[in-house]
Every structure is written in structure tokens, then in C-alpha cells.
Amino acid sequence: MSEMVVSLGPPGASPAALEAPADLASTSGVVFDVQRHSLHDGPGVRTSVFLKGCPLRCQWCANPESQVRNPEPMLRAAHCIDCGLVSDSSGATPSCPLCWPAWQQDRASQATHAAIAARVDVCPTGALTWVGVRRTAGDVVAEVLRDRVFYGAGGGLTLTGGEPTMQPDYCEALLRLAKDAGMATAMETCGHTSWAVFERLAPWLDVFLFDVKHVDPDRHRRFTGLDNALILDNLRRLSAAGASVRVRVPLIPGFNTSGGDIAALASFVRSLPGPVQGVDLLPYHSMGRAKYEALGREYPWRDHKRLADATVQQLASLVADHGLPLTIGG
Image (cartoon, rainbow, N blue to C red; front, side, top):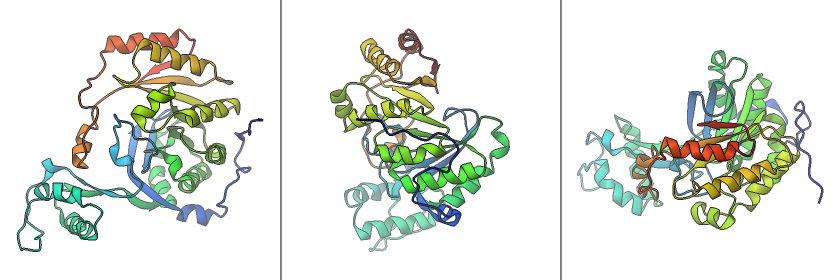
């Protein structure tokens, strides 16, 4: 079967469904964070826009608030001051941490939704909040452009998440508006999307930051919920099409940090039909652990510790032995 070639020249040949600039600016999507002055999400200084929704359920996920597409409630109990500003139906004013377990059991009900919304509206500390806000592409790009003075020659906009391609119309609108403004663009992706989406977005992207977690399909499915056939096929096709790709490998203890795991992954990257910009090894961290509690979820990876620096260096040497350009930390 012949490959579909991705156009990487000047934008204009994209099979875009959205045509008029007004349509682009008014296209809306769900964003859960905009992070300024990012140094590890693409070349130079970046402004990273985090979109909600992800098809994978990686057990070590550092952004569990990104997985569900719609806004969802989050409680940072340590910030609660038991303000007593909202009473329940009995006239009592229980603190939000006391209500949280019951809300989690019945979070889909309208009554629970109303109770949470009422408390979010008056919470004086931001302890209780909704994660995820629907915003237009024009509004987000206007915010990103405020950082333009810091970008220099290499920086710009990075779309991340979650998995940005779960909101393809929104991604295209953000990227096209950024390009119209003369910004460099990047997108971090887990790779699990249809080829048509990558083909649609490629003309507006300077670089793909492509996550590869494992080359074994069964192990990938066991720990992320889905196998990796579509992911690896999309990476091959992007490489064959001449796309600019950096492969990003999260080093997860208990999942992919044996010498055999990393050697097999490096061998796969080396076998791609076109060169990659480089391989970024991203050592595991547990900084997202508190988010699970705030979302009322268990953290599946709680028994795993950070990798020792010496272990990371050993794994890095296996990648370097395959002749691949290498960065530790992105």
C-alpha cells in the first residue's frame, strides 16, 4: 500500500475543513492549563497549551486531569479553610473535604454537579475548582502572543495535553492562527489517532514531539489500556513523509527501564524510514501524585520510585549506541 505524503511546505494545501479566519478564531475547545516559559516542550522558550482528553490511561500519568475530555471537579484539600459559605439542604455547612467522598460516588448526578458548582463559585482559596475551561482559539492565541518577546529565533507555541488530536478542529485552528502570526509550532502527541488527523495538522506544525513508551504491544496494552500498533504505524508514516519528529521516551520504572526494553525501542527508532531530530529520555517523576487525590482517584504507580541518575545514564548509553541524537530531560 502506498504512503500518503504529508505536505510540509508552506501552509495552503491543507485539507482543512475550516476556511475563514473568523471561523478559526471562534473555534472552541477545552483547555486545562496554559504554561508560560516552558523549556522542555520543544525548541527554545515555549508557551504550552494543555488540551483535555486522552485515549490512553497510562498508570503513571502525571496529568490525570487531562484524561477526561470534559471539565471535571478537583479539590485541593490542603487549601480548604472550612469557610462555611455554602450550606447543605439541612442547613449545615460541612467542609468540602468531608463532602468529597460522597461527591465522587455520585459525581454524574445533577444534584452533585449543582452542589460542586455552588461551592466553586464562592470558594475563597480556589481549593475547589473545575479543571478545564472552554475557550476560543482566538482567545488562546492572543494569550500566547503576549509571550512573543521571549521566544527568540526558536521558541513558540506547543500543543500538549492530554492528547491534542482528540480535539482536531481546535488544534488546527490554534496552529493556523499561530502560523498566521508568524509563530513556530510544535505538538506533543501519544500517536494514537487516525492518520487523517496527522495529515491534516502536519502543514501547520514545525515539529512533532512523538511519545514512544514501549515497542511490545501486549505490555503497552497492559499498562496504558491500548496496544501500540496504531502509534508505531503513525510514527513510521510521519518519518516516511519527511516530517520533523523528536521521539520522546518516558523512562518509567516497572514498565520500560530494562536494558532490553530500551535497546528494542532504540532499534525501532533507528529502523524508521527517515531520520528523527533526536530522542528525548524523560525520567519518571511522581509530581502528579497529589492530583490523583484531588480528583478522588488512586495513584496506581505509588510504589515506584525515581530512577537513580546512574541508571538513567546507563539507559542513555544504550540509545547512543544506536547512533541516535540524545537528550536527557527533553
